[in-house]
Amino acid sequence: MLRPLTSALRLLRPWKPLQTRGCASDGAARGREIQVRALEGPDQGITEILMNRPRARNALGNVFVRELLEALAQLREDRQVRVLLFRSAVKGVFCAGADLKEREQMSEAEVEVFVQRLRGMMTEIASTAVMGLIETTRGLLPGAGGTQRLPRCLGVALAKELIFTGRRLSGTQAQVLGLVNHAVAQNEEGNAAYHRARALAQEILPQAPIAVRLSKVAIDRGMEVDIASGMAIEGICYAQNIPTQDRLEGMAAFREKRPPKFVGK
Image (cartoon, rainbow, N blue to C red; front, side):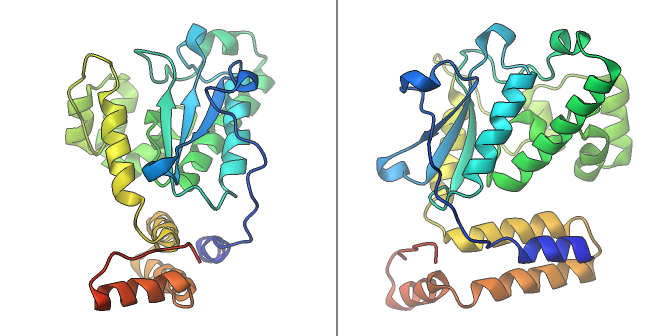
């Protein structure tokens, strides 16, 4: 119980501004496999991670994983980020999974280290993103946490069936099983899923940011422990919300029948 409780208490550590952000339109960022774009206007607060490795169909190689971990480490400390979306910059492709061609060139020791990095990356994505739109957030790559994450999502029997058979699922099948929340028909531009994800991000955006972050911690950590410990984690998280300006603003807005104006404090 100590680890999740300690993790919850560390949620609201001091923020540090993101020093630099790669953007798809920036010349210096175009050659990077991972690019970061902060949306503006009514979508301010939504940040996109663009996966840009067209020659390998966005496969998870050494450079890709390193750049993604670097981006997540910076975004985790950026107070302006309220919703994080994963998006492919490669048309017709999202993420091909592990780069097996690159892995063939690794020694056994290098493979072990790399797979550990993949596990860490999946955990970082799950703990950072309010909404991570990447199939590997569920840890569906065997050796990258899939044997642990999938049973917790689907149950032991079904997880074993999918892992043992290596079965591929359609979007609709994944939705029926509960692996994804939404499955949408593709459009001519090939970005129907992105538009659905962005619409969901826009629903999250106006909500109280501290409450959203604390809710994520309470859910994620609470699912790892028994119900009594989970209730304790929820209590710790709620206690951090009590002294915030956002909580008072939410109550005032409800009383005055107006939209709240949350500031993240």
